[in-house]
Image (cartoon, rainbow, N blue to C red):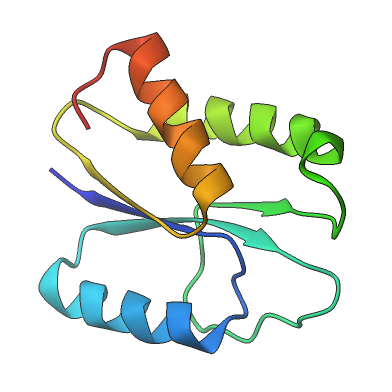
Length: 104
């Protein structure tokens, strides 16, 4: 079992603090992240995957959600814990769980 940490804004200080706390509990943590143009990312941790999210309506983000689903398919195994920030990414993760029937 591993923890997959999904950050909807890699540069967000609150998410980085939570990530550091989770790393102390589980060193086999994997990060899937999103960057945004208006925040520079300054984390010392190297994420497995980084997508770029535009500041716009949710309908304009469909392409990045498809890429995120593909990365979840490559990364997540049965029994993994997916720790998600953001309602849209949580809904996408639930869609992934439903489509793949993986117990996450």
